[in-house]
Image (cartoon, rainbow, N blue to C red; front, side, top):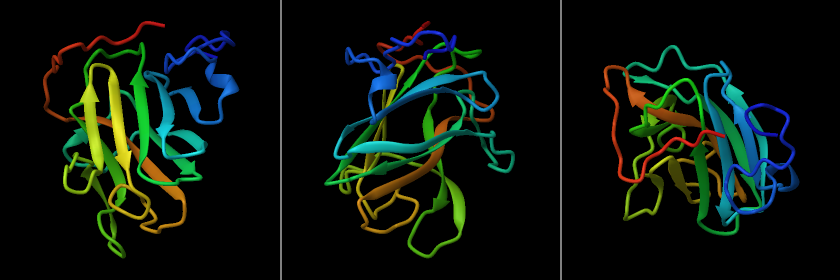
Length: 178
């Protein structure tokens, strides 16, 4: 329904179909209302479920979340999954430098905050292009909070900047004003 909450045709991922008609797309405000994002499963998953905006973490050390912190599940995962997050108009134009997750960084480990950095050898992590963050997941590997190969990716995380960071300019970067 878009940032105003009144646009039934809002298409936050730009695929030509309103988000409200797709089980693999969700658009929502951050918990504090300052950010607006679209989250879309574009490869390797059947549906996006349990999408929620979470309060900004207060115990995350060096990171802050000008665009919000989110939780979601990708179900029906059949291979590597690609989830794209589009940043829309909000109270900040600061582009994130990291996608920070909260969970175990290894099977059986205690939950921590960690940057989900792209790793070519594993094919997992976050990449950035303009106002789009691409999250590369493999079921049961780093980035999947439950660490189980069960056709479900569990993600609590969000686009972040280091607490003392200055604005970042990125080629092709423009925050969409919707």
